[in-house]
Length: 434
Image 1 (tube, rainbow, N blue to C red):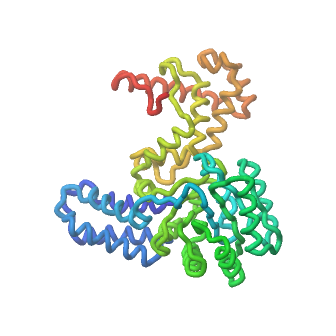
Image 2: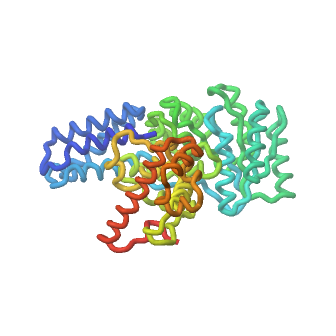
Image 3: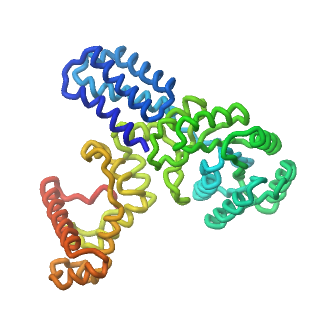
């Protein structure tokens, strides 16, 4: 989502690289470009203005103009201010040993119901016993959606009835907890296509009766500046304790999401990074997002994803690695997300790749189809692939002989390159070990 913003900020700072000294005019020109990149990314005007002013004060105060590495120093200050704008230290909802009732609010279409299911699965994986409450008294479809999600993730769902009174809902929740103990109750509330008096009145009454320990506002990061208006309206009328940003994997400019924390004064607890229920919701880390925006990578998240995917290097020497091992590794990597996202988390990689670079996932699928069309013997020893075998593999995988040839050549070239690197640097076992 923040690709364009990332490129613009890095380009502005990179103009100063290699220069021993810069003038105050150079610094102001760079900061002017950064401000324009923030505004074009849909960052709130006041937020962008304050951000640049703060960076300017700190860079001048730190005598960056006298530094031998002004670009690095400016980048460091920009990073610190980005982290500050996004909320500083990472925060999570308060979770007591019991008596946790979380109130989910947001407009229809923001992803509120799906996020409720993701939250339940996230905390279930951490040993909690969640209960989902489908409390939309107007839309049966919303209750059906949550029930289906609950069945999928193995979490019970308590459904309200049409027009059910808040007091009745509270009593039913209490009754459920007496025979089925749960230490986290997540209430998915009603939504509308836009904010109206009826919606706010309904939510305020239900919240007053249930007395939630957390009120979480789900905000669609792709709605631009409207996301900020929504956030302010819910805070003023209902009161929220934290934010959850959804659709951060989209292709919108995303700057409004960067402004949400500053405008509302509420911490961002989670970010929706994919439509998948499993792994589609992640704790929000301001420092990690700032690192990725500035092209510094996100090694910590990469390592956490690798651990979750149980990624490990093949337990054999490079000369013995086969095409079957290649497919196994590719499948493990896919558990971590898209290949483009994975590359973006590797420190320094964004500078090595061309602007707008995207891994063609369809091409990856074709590679897998080619290998799966081979016999086990052919996967272990591609040297036996004569013309007739390659023609058969191409037909079986729905590709061409040229594509089969290209895959085999790339595989052999990669093995040769890795063997050369091992000779130069000593035998390695890869980034991820058993």
